[in-house]
Image (tube, rainbow, N blue to C red; front, top):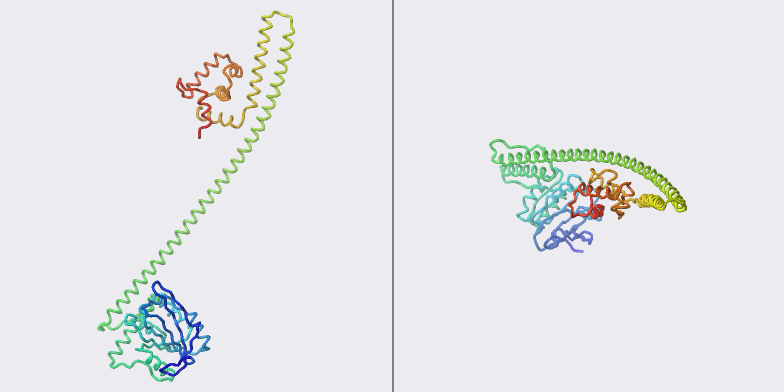
Amino acid sequence: MSTCTVSNMEITENPNWRTLHKDSNNGYQKVVKRLGNDVILYSIETDHDISLDTMNIDMLQTVLQDSKIGNKPVCLLWNMKHITNISLTYKKQIANLIYNRRVHFGIVVFFNVEPVCMTLVQTFAAMVPEDMTVLIKQNYTEAVNTTLAWKEGLPVDTIYESAEEEKYELQKNEFLAALARISWLDMMEQSIPMPSNDDKLLPFFQAISHLQSDLLEISRNKEQELRQIEQDGEKTLTEKNILLNAQKELYKKLKNQLEKEKSALTARIATQEMELTRISTAVVEKTSALRQLLDLITTLDIDQSQKRTMIDICSNMIDTELIEKRLNIELTTTDSEFLSKLQKKHPNLNQRELRICLLIKLNYNTRDIARSVGISTRGMESIRYRMHKKVGLSKHQSLKSYLTELIMQRD
């Protein structure tokens, strides 16, 4: 354990009272030591100039708890060697520490203050509460002796050589304090005492008053912008919710409509399946009856030419019924889609022409198709010619190829 060369007080150190800080250039250490029982020494260990960005309040609290200082006023010596700037965040943390009374500082003595940082330290000294003494000294020796004198109740305040100098320092402190309250504490509406009209420092106080008004206006504009953004956000959210609810309602209606259409299609399919079954049964019955009739004709003892004519008629009727049966059985979902697409693309085709197109696509020949629709082969050729023109094909294009390709086309 070492001893202070100025006060002969023991210097207490603790590994927990050190914090390593890494910046973009070189690291440094924040170090706290205790002189005697109740004097705290804060310093930065580094060999280069640095900027303080954040304050380690927890480490200071740990030092005070370990030192068992309790509620006694804290004596703080602050070595400012190599400190050339202090961030706004750090300033706000200092102000918060002072005015929230987490630590009761009796006296704070800055020493080894770099010239570039002197105004910042003077600003800090100007804005502290009245029951707190803040002084700036040249070196460690002066700082320790001043602290010892304060502890003994001796006067430590600065003695001015003239009333004019004292007035100037008081006005400077008022100016710096007002600036600190605006910048560090966001006290935009604080009252700023103005010097008399003939005072040479009046322009500086007027300038800070104007700055205060400008910052207050900026703050109000920002608040208004934030409120407008919030209102616009709420309006947009409300509109989006209305739109979403409307879409949900629309989707609900569409779903119900689709369900109804699905039910109707299901019922229609069931009806068609029943009709298909009935037709298939009827075709089987007709075919069976025609075969019995054909067998009966072959046994008749009649004119052979008449007999051949009757046999041909029965055979043609049987073939027609068989074609009809196969057509009803082969009508698949793909065939239904084909008819739907064909009717949509060529609404000028009638029901018989649609049926003929399906039979052509299913590779039935002209004779079978003619029998199925109940016309002659020549009549069927005439219909195909007219259909060829209806769908807009040239004379060199194939109707069958067109119908086959149609099912592969996208809507």
